[in-house]
Length: 354
Image 1 (cartoon, helix red, strand yellow):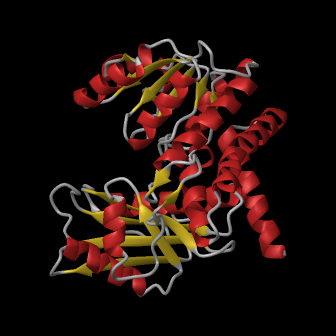
Image 2 (cartoon, rainbow, N blue to C red; image 1 turned 90 degrees about the vertical axis):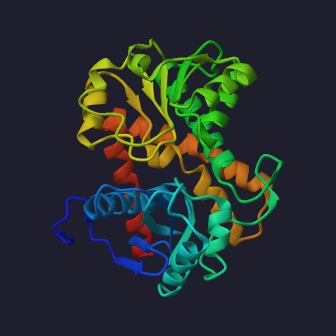
Image 3 (cartoon, rainbow, N blue to C red; image 1 turned 120 degrees about the vertical axis):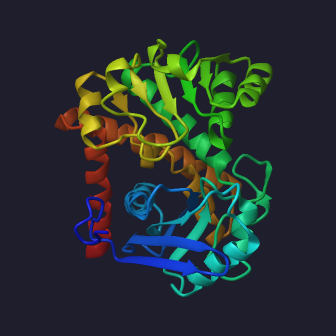
């Protein structure tokens, strides 16, 4: 397996492989950059088909976290961890404890939180063996509601704010009344996003592989279900990917009937060249690591005095950051992802000089 010549390796500072025979733990931690502070990023548990696939994911995700934190104005670096295994079958307290002991060896250079395949309860279990966890404190959240550290509400609100920014830039609209939005994936973030959109008067279409979740959304939110096979044939103004990544690719881009792509999923583009393909079709893309930063913003405030109003203001700054990226992209004639990368690197370089 390649490391330094790996296609996703980008001067990562530290890559650690951990195993524990007794619990079955097989995990990788990637720390991309700590210029702004200790690396923070969630722990993903997934039954990767190979070690190579797991390494590719953690390298790419950790770099995204560096840029996400930089553009969100956080004093945090970028890192990510993956546990190889089926979260429904392989996850045990012993495995989580072993993972916690592994993180402790890194001395606080990486702080973990929940992600796909892990929960707040899982991270609390990890936290019995290390102090380097986040997103586990009970508190009154940014929205004034009791919370347990779950970043999903903050992520959903940040994506909603980002969609408002994209619609304002692309469609010259200051509201979402009648705007057709398709939400792909009704997990913790997607469901909340659909709720915010319907409250704002948008015409919301939803797609999910789980029929029970679709039925619940239809009953509770009044949305319209779209079969996965019909998703890309649906006429929409905004496509919001909120499931797994790589949904924007050579096959799907020609079939997209939308003006905007703006959702919560990580790594929505299969490759960065697909940002160019979207731009050539006149589709505005909200870079995923910018628009979905609400969760890391929310969790980061645990390290300080958590003040709901200040956190909400910080999350809603995502819309302002996206507006700057959209305007610079239009001015420079380059894809929004490339512009976002430039802006993130500018902020990283400024901090290094300072």
